[in-house]
Image (cartoon, rainbow, N blue to C red; front, side):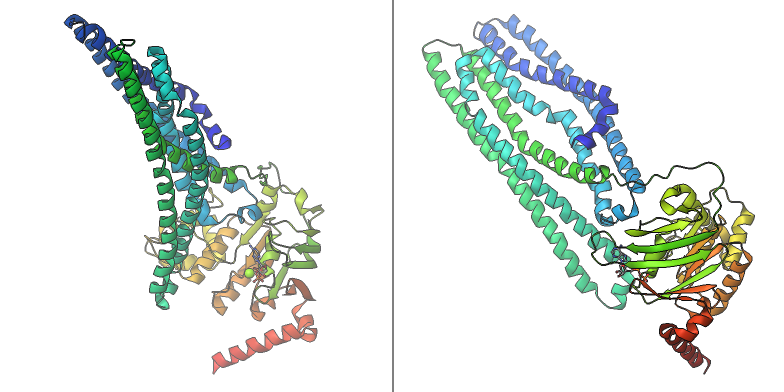
Length: 574
Ligand code: ADP
Ligand code: MG
């Protein structure tokens, strides 16, 4: 909890003010039984109405004071809790952005969403409650006990005997609570994941009529969440009856013993009333304990989940470098192997090849052969497990990440566009790009005409509230987004798969006019043929490397690819 709550440090002053106000409220509460005792013993019993009026008015005044400080306290507490939650949330988000991709992938995105939303809200409530009542209830218990001793030692001792039992009992309950609430949060992760998957796959669900199946799958995880939550609440509900039992037993003892002492006139009625009053206040405070323990256990579980993200140390150092990018003439892979975290299979094994500046390399291979993995090593999204990648004269890890990524244009296999207009998306990586730069990129990517045909042109909003783009349109906008910064090295991960042959050829022609080194992953022989070299991957290994003519002569795999694609083209012509 320490790491998360260190974010409350900047709010030291308002926190101290809030706690002082709590203290003030508490003092008033604790003085009241004394005043009542005084009114009874010196006023009512002694038939002196002036004492009743004077001390009664003082009691009223103090009550108003407590009321006002309660309101001011709420104001400060709410402000502190909200600001603290904002700080934790944005720190967690910032930390996620800085994490290496490999580490980031060890978290499930649905779980990260729960942590950024629900878990933060839980610790925010905890802080608010701490400032308002959390500190108050234990202080009421301790304060009442002390005051009771002040009034009458023997009677107060009766209130104290049960304390050790209660302390042990409460400690056990907190331990239980933390583990149960941690499991509740994990269940919530699962509900979120299920919802996320389903909503994303709605087209599929409808096309395959799987709504009943999906609903029952969702209900199962929702039910598990409900069951765990109920289990947690039941455990917490056990606290109150146990506390009340012990406290009531103590109060009975106080009454019985007190009554005897009044008979022997060794104490006054007011004293007994005061001690009883303190006992009742303790009981009242205890009855809040089950609620407090619940809030505390939840907050502890949630803060641990947030801390898991905050303490991750494998971060990327993406300092912006000033000055020109270093010049490079070639990219070389030396015996590069790579395994994903948590997988014992090598996704890439001993990869060797060289690509000269200005040339185009095509990568072909079956799905799962490691094509996407290979190209993601170049912008250092992942680091090779062994071997070395050298760009220019320097191994990749000696390049600053910002310079390396500055010169690379990477179009991932799945085109991802963000909420906003088409222009926003194109300018996502180049805030200050001029309109003519935008148009140059979209013209090269063969999407300019299509964009202009939209009702609002470049200002057309994409997605839910705007136009829905086809797969090929999304791919071309993603390509244009990569081209806009005029990358020196362009990586296209199957990014032309949804384009028709004519459009794709026009795009490749346009690429040839640009001064850009290109790595293009493709399934199409027609596309690969235009490259200076082709790398054939199978099961994470290079099975052949050469020009299209060389491979056509010697590679069985390439010949099979040619044969199958010629065949299907032939069929299309018929
Ligand atoms: P391709 O792009 O050629 O279809 P990939 O590079 O995506 O192939 O995948 C190569 C291998 O690595 C596959 O066996 C795949 O299951 C595995 N793989 C891909 N991504 C991950 C990941 N994030 N974690 C673990 N294994 C992965
Ligand atoms: Mg792939």
